Length: 290
Image (cartoon, rainbow, N blue to C red):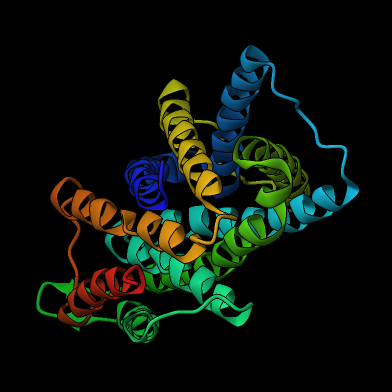
């Protein structure tokens, strides 16, 4: 499959994964939901690798170094995104998080990959869109709450760290171990790091949310499986000179997630935020044009 196909498959998987991640995060807490989702994804990949006879671990120490670096960024980004989902509106945080593709593209450009004028304009548009959707809104029938603004800032942090993480995956990890093994190593490392962070957090915060039963795990499990599939599609397309195309098309999941939030969750946005969402979608499309 080409980069365009893999990017679109990643967008479809990310879109539904992000939508399902919000109820999991609000019922279980950001860290527990993230840990549960990663656990389901890692288990599914382990079964696949065992059935296909694929090697579980690389023998290259350099590959492990790239994996640890990428996993640290992906863990920070994943936890920040779940935190943003627990605080903010999905229709706002999804477009912000979707700008991770612009971060990856900018880093690819700095590393020597050429980008077009339209792509450059798209990158600028993404930055403006992030500012617009992050602004406090107060209009008739709608007012941004402090929690929603805080959620937007968490989403910005998630976009930056995840974008950097995908760049590291495409630049240093996937070329050495391949997309499937890269995804498995990432899931394993992020699962371990999230567990360590969760352990420290539980010691500091006694009143952490408790598991909300099978319903919460259902949302976390489905979200984890879909997000793992999205990372796998992305990893398969990285390291082939199409990093910007794959990541940006994958970030088009913001369109699907935003539509689900608006029509199914009945979320409301202010006029400026509507403009930011529209600009984020348009700019993401421009970044993907060569």
